[in-house]
Image: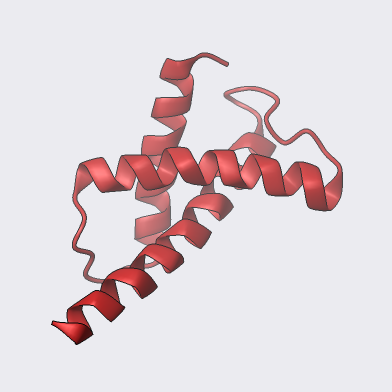
Length: 90
């Protein structure tokens, strides 16, 4: 897959992750896209390490989308924990 496909998957996976975890986030669309892209990479890596499968097969494969969404959810949880701690200190 090319870089444009990764950006598109990342954007959509980040939006799906935010829809699955509603709440107030300090980040906007750019943060969502970055979390989604990094989440897609994280999900693909975790799928390969834990399950021994190549989860990044193609743009329309379900495993690619599941890996990207799960990775995005993990990073969104971490992002919320980090930003919540910053707001408490201020």
